[in-house]
Amino acid sequence: MQKVHVKKNDQVIVVAGRDRGATGKVLRVLPKEGRAIVERINMIKRHTRPNPQSGVQGGILEREAPIEVSNLKVICPSCSKPARMGRQRLESGGFARVCKKCGAILS
Image (tube, rainbow, N blue to C red; front, side):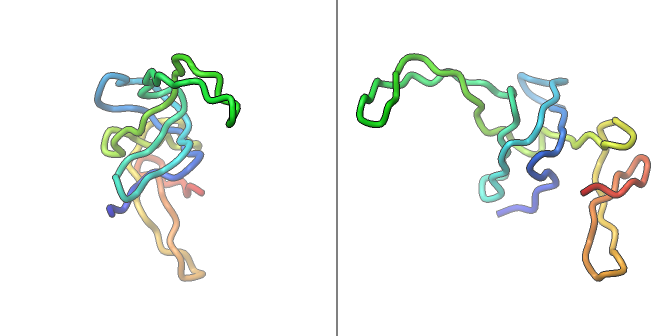
């Protein structure tokens, strides 16, 4: 399991691979695999068989596949630029993610 720099609902940009330059929202993070599922990124076609018992219609479905987190960069909400994330200790004792470009604290 690796420490990932992206969280759910982060806006990210793809920096490497087939979808390079595309942006999207992180739907799910899979830290054990070091991957994340991003909205409308790394789309695959899934052939499904109809199953009337569970209400599955069947056919060819398009859905997101997990993408390596090393290929993602978080877009800072305050400066709207892709930036690296740092950590800053808070007075309360916890840590907060910080944009390395503008220094803004992220959620």
